[in-house]
Figure (cartoon, rainbow, N blue to C red):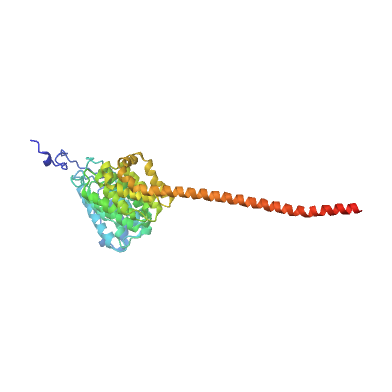
Length: 424
């Protein structure tokens, strides 16, 4: 019998999906060489004199660079055990013993780590894989891979970032980040620790790591399953929204805004939390950030549901009205662009009874102020014109007065000349 509607669990997906047969996978097998030399145990590092320590260390690192096929559980058991023992010894020695990590050893360690952990991950068998509900595909080569990831010489007391930066570069970081696609949660936990140490030790790589992490966030949020889990919503409210308050927002704002919009496309009910959060952190003195906020707000309104728009229309457009009246022309111009967006304009028209009172006062004052300024400008222009006319008339009168003053002596002189001529 069909259960009543109120008894149907719309969020139960496990029971609806048919279980798929699990298949082990490992990318390590593709580097396995069947004709490789058999490994033999080497002396322990602690049992050799100091003069032979680094030579033996290089030999052990070379041994640990040999790859095995872990899909065949019974193949090369002796060699696998030799490598595992050597890796564990290296982890203990490099991490705690002084004088082991010298400059010539750095390239050998980086080479061994790269050979073991950097690989092309196989495609996921289940594109809808949920790490919290589905059982992950565990890496068969984990006994070796774990020891290699633990061999993070970054924590060694002799570690020198100035030497290691020749080998730990952007390419190394990018390959490290690509491993976060691994389905094995154990590997991802170790990768987080390694990435954190790289970020702390190499100051020159910090900006690059932040930039690459932005792209990772985009892919992760885009792949969230529906419905969005509570912890993901908390991540939006407690992490992404407060990030809008940092001073360096311009460095990553484009990616941050995209993440926020991705959340809203996944779950429209988060719209009110997002917009009220942005209004809470709205910049007061930085016009550049204010323009960025307006741009992000328009992107949000492009995907907002009409039912969600009703919840935030009043506080939102009160802020928009304040931006329209901003003395900075870029802020005011960016706010007015909202009325060029057809979808936003349709939302405003449908809710004009609420939006119009929020913006009318500001628009009316701006219009009245604009008209007053125009009138004052016209009045000043008229006064200026009248002043120039007055000055011109004064100049002409003075000019006429000067000419009259020059002609008067001549007029008095002319009769005298005529009289003297008659007498003669």
